[in-house]
Image 1: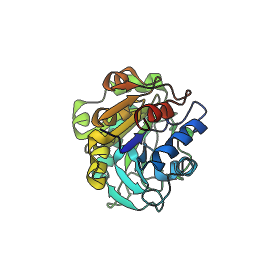
Image 2 (image 1 turned 135 degrees about the horizontal axis):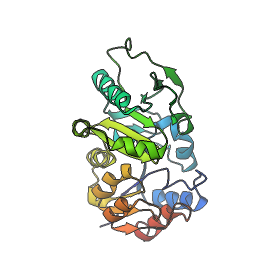
Image 3 (image 1 turned 90 degrees about the horizontal axis):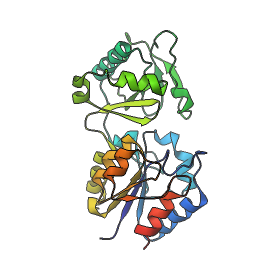
Image 4 (image 1 turned 90 degrees about the vertical axis):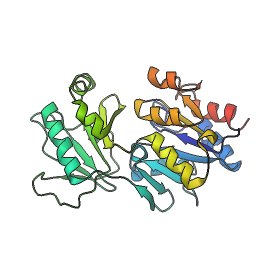
Length: 270
């Protein structure tokens, strides 16, 4: 069966170790587009956080889509118009903030336009500033924030060694209530239970009338696992975690060896 849509993660996948898109990857994406294949970048970032990458890859034309916030938001990349959005309620935000306090970890809330900063544990400012530079940061009073608060995701960003230990202490009830996963070594993400990159592909399948069997998904980290498992052709980068490699049908080259281009050339263009 021919592949009609390729879903591509950014960090560790499309982007190399210098956080750049190689010319080889750009050429392969354009060739696939020229053959009528949908190319969809799938990321935990907001749309504003990947606009320059979309423009570099010529993915802001009419009909181009992006899956942001790990599948919780589907947008036209040209206009930013939202097709579907799944958010956390004020009660969810308060609940996860209490968890972050119990874990003694800094916590941030992110919507379409802003990263909110509630009070951090003493001596533990969030490290999220290192990763998210596209959105402004705004202090948040947990007592007075509005009822209509709609948050796309919550992050806890801290040193990997301590973060990994704290993750083990998260009660099962939170895993039952939310989608909780790491997207970087030092970044834990909390999303609505109905959100992950795999569910995002199912939504794209419904919107575009493209079957999952006609999709390829390429990723490297835990937050890519669901889409690698969901797509008809799951591809892991050579630099992917073992759990993603084990779930994939194909292991391509690394992100520093233009692994996205290799996968497209071998399994889409051919």
